[in-house]
Length: 318
Image (cartoon, rainbow, N blue to C red; front, side, top):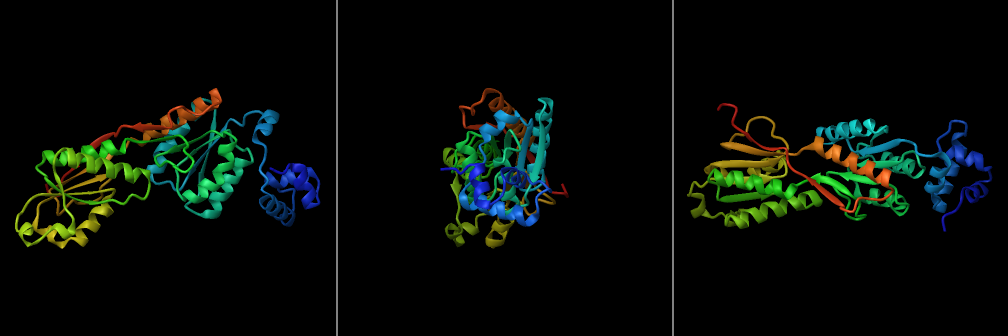
């Protein structure tokens, strides 16, 4: 049973107002007392009654946007989401944790204390998020994930149509005469899994071939066929080149998601699947607003945003 604020005050040997101020981060409470109260709250499993707090104080008209960094893949959707929320009369607090465990835990604690009406989250450190978000999920607290879903809690997510983007990369390379592919992408999250599925389905549908290093014998090395190198990022392609020196005997085409920096040599060209991060941020904010206004989560747990474009990159000397 969840202890009440009165129970927590009794365990700490202080009055309720002191406990309340400590939990809200008030500077009127001495650091030693505040830390003691926070430790007892964690030990007892105390969590605020968010519904009661909202009934008492009304909406905060504030949304938390929790994200691991301010790189373009996080910054761009955050900018668009904050614009949509501002037009609806909501302030957005950007909470950047830089993959620091302590920072992320504090942010989730703030949410449990009722400082915002809802949250947008770009996930990382899934175990910590699952543990910290579970009380909020149980209270039907509005949360929308962007880009990377948190499968353990089955929360709504707005992401790219990754499998279709992967399929489009294969199709572009196929039209350039590529019939043999090398892949370097690990199924570390739902996004990568979706892209792997798209790569494999397209290669199978077009009756193309996936090469593995062990498949490439002396006879095949003597045939200068064009090889398509597919990966999640530029770094994945560089790793394939490093691990497979026999590739130097073949023409190559690269296929990645989002970005390619510098020259594409030794490939003849590269394709990048550009995600529409602006639309992703806008759609996520609109879904959250609908949840806040209607009082219930969206029926469709996942929304896939089409890619912005497939961009062709030529060598710098071309």
